[in-house]
Amino acid sequence: MNEFNTDNIKAQMRKGVLEYCILSILDKNDAYASSLIAELKEAKMIVVEGTLYPLLTRQKNQELLTYRWEESSQGPPRKYYAITEKGRALLKEMDAAWQDVVETLALIRKK
Amino acid sequence: MNEFNTDNIKAQMRKGVLEYCILSILDKNDAYASSLIAELKEAKMIVVEGTLYPLLTRQKNQELLTYRWEESSQGPPRKYYAITEKGRALLKEMDAAWQDVVETLALIRKK
DNA sequence: TTTAGTACCTTGCGATACAAGGTATAAATA
DNA sequence: TATTTATACCTTGTATCGCAAGGTACTAAA
Image (cartoon, rainbow over all chains, first blue to last red; front, top):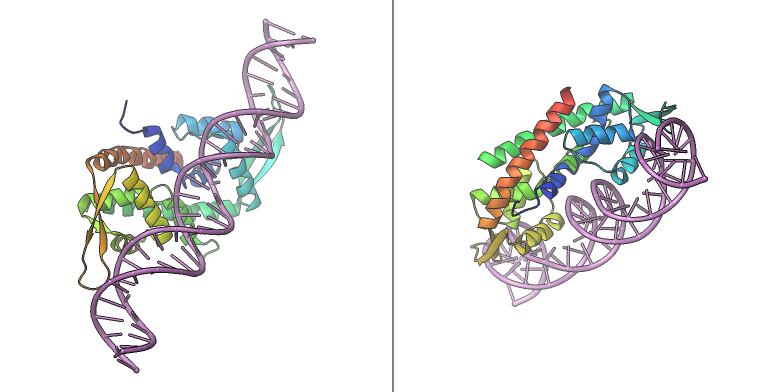
């Protein structure tokens, strides 16, 4: 056990990076909300439904994503999200912004 | 001009990293609010007063920081903040958490 | 027909970043 | 001497957003 709640620290660090993660994952493959949660959980970037659904809706409203319904062989239909051209354009800028933040922090941390 | 507001993207990316930045800077030298803002601005991590003052107060209340007043030769007295042992302990954990987030994102982005 | 599994979504709360505005001290300028 | 400029502190109100909790609905198995 730590003096601090490390999970909470990581959660804090993740803030503001979630949108980038979602677009990155969808840039590789279309996915539905539950599978995104599973994938992020595996990568130790825990996200819960109450966070993800509104985020996906926001990104869809910004035309960064589109969606389509697909039948599932086991359970209710799935809402598959796909990244749009506009989403890819933003993703590219996010790559640069992220690089920038990482480099800046490396500088601040060691200087 | 970009299709997107890049500054806003960076602001988004910075969220959750600010506490880490503050502790990192104070780990090197004691500083007062205005000098912190100047240093972060130089590093292109723009922070405004309305963000920084409450953050410093929170960190002080968590005993991550202490402060002392010092006279200035040109202007009102300055409130110098210093990192505490507890602050350094948290900083160490933040280093690990940050590394983790950076690595995870690198994985997600390229996979 | 009830339970378990999967998938969708919303509401209410708390935390926090930012814009804007306010107070106070000291030095320079009119 | 009065005003302006520069520096430094701080607070209030608003908006955003992540999370906990709870709710709906479809399918298959018990």
